[in-house]
Amino acid sequence: MKAIFEAINNIFSFVTPVSDFLWDFPTNFEWYAKIPLLGNLSLAIIVLIGSGLFFSFKLGFIQVTHFKRGVKTLVEKRNAKTGISPLASFFLSTAMRVGPGNIIGVTGAIAVGGPGALFWMWVSAFFGMATAYMEGTLAQIFKEKKDDEFVGGLPFYGRKLLGNKAWIGIFLSVLYILYALCCLPAQGFNVVSSVGRIAETVTGTTIAPDALLYYIVGAIVIVATAVIAFGGIKKVTKWTDKMVPVMAVVYVLTVVSLILINFTQIPFFFKSVFGGAFTPEAIFGGAFGTVLAQGVKRGLMSNEAGQGTITMPAAAADAEHPCEQGVVSSLGVFLDTIVICTLTGFVVVMAHCWLGDGGEAWFALDKLPMFTESVAALTPGTALNAVMSVLVSLCFCLFAYTCLIGMISFSEIVANRISTSKVCITFVRWICLFVAAFGILCNIAGLELGNLWAFSDLGNILIVYFNVPIVYVGAKYVFRATKHYKKNDGTPFTSDVIGRTDCTYWDKKTED
Image 1: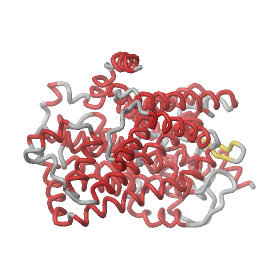
Image 2: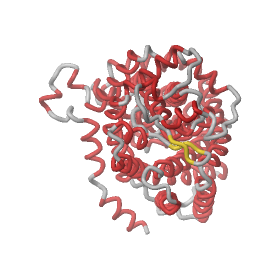
Image 3: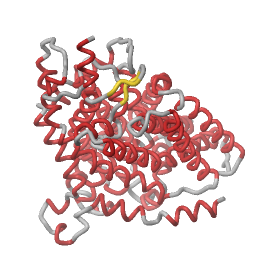
Image 4: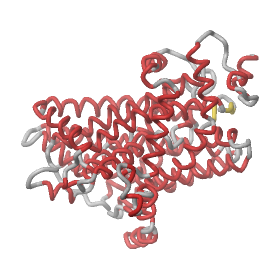
C-alpha cells in the first residue's frame, strides 16, 4: 500500500512549485524583485491586504465600529424558522476557520519567516475582517431558500453578479468542491494521527502506523462523519454548536496556562514579534519579503478571508439584515487569527526552541512536532508535560475534525448550484467522504503526502484570484446595504435598497 501512495505522491510532485510560483508571483522575477519596497510584495499580498485596506476605508472601518454590535447579535437568543441562527452560523464557520492551520500554519510561518510573521498575520487579519464582512454580506443578499434551509455563498452571488449565467454558478461550485477535495486528505490524516499521538502520550509507548488502533479510529471517524455530515446543515450545526466552544475553550485555557507559567517570557514574545516584523533575523532568510509573505500566506490559510470559502454558513443564517451577518463573519476572522493564532504564536516564540544549540534540530522537525516540542519546553520536567501534550493533541484533533465536517457540508451546499437532485448531492457527499478516507489510509501507510498537502496552498490562492474580483463587482451593493444598515431607521431591506431587482428572498420576506 505504501508503494501505491508514494507513486501518487510522485505524480503530484509538480504541485508545490506551481503553488509557490503563484504565491510568489511576480517577486520570482529578478526585474520586479529589484524594485524598492514593491519588489517584496507579491500579487497575492497586494490583492489580499490591498483589498482589505480599500474595503476598511470605504466601510468606515466597520470591523471596529460595529464589533460590539456583532457580539450582541451572537448572544441574542433567536429561534430560526428557516436556516440557522447567527450564532450557529458563527460556530459553523469557526469549525472551518479554526483548523490545524491555527497550529501548524502559525508554527510553519514562524519557522520560515521568524516571529515577525505573526505581526503580519495580525495586519492581514485586521484588514481581512473587512473583506470577510463584504463576503458575508454578499452571501446574505443573494441567498436562496430551499425547503427549511438557506443556500448561498460564492457560487450563488458569483452567478448573480456576473450576468446570472448558469455556467458561472456551476464553475464556481466545482471550483469550491475541488478545493475541498484538495484539503480533505490532510484533515482525515490529522484526525487519526492526533488520536494516535494522544494514545502514545497516555501509554508512554510508540504505536506503529499500521496498528489496529488506527484502523479502528479510522473506521469510527468515517462512520461518524457520514452520520453527521449527511444529515443536512441543521444536523451539522447541532454538532458544531457543541464541538466548537469545547475546542476553543480547551485550547485557550491550555495555552493561557502555559503563558502564565512562563509569564516572564511575555516581554520577549512582543520584542521578537515586533522586532522581527521589520528586521528579520538571518536564520529565517533575513528578508523582509519572506516575513511578510509568510504572515499573509499562513494568515489566509487560517482565517480564509478573501477566499469565499466561508460564505456558505454566512448565507445559511436567518439574519434580520444582510449586513448583520457580514459583521458576524468579520468576528470569525478576529477569533481565528487575533485570538487563536496569537496563542499558538506565544507558545512557539516563548519556548525559545528556534534559538541556541537546539535550533537546528527544531527546524528539522515537521510542523506539529515543532509545536509539541515548544509545549514541552515550557513545562520541562513536570507532570504538566504529558497533560499539556494530550490537551494540545485533543484540540488539534477537534480542529481537523470540524474542518472535515465543514468542508463536506459546504460542498453539499454549493452542489445545489449545480443541481438540487438528491443524486447529485449524494454523489458529492460520498466523493468527499472517500477522499477523506484516503487521507486516513495515508496515515496507516505511514506516509505523509507532502505534495498532495501542497494542494491546500494551491487551492487557497486560486480561489482568491476568482473570488476577490467578484467581490469588487458586488462592492457597490454592499456599500449601499451598509449605508441602510447603519441608518437603522426600521425600514426593511429589499432589492430597492441596493438598486437591483433580484434579491428574491428579501423581497418576499417583506411581502409576507
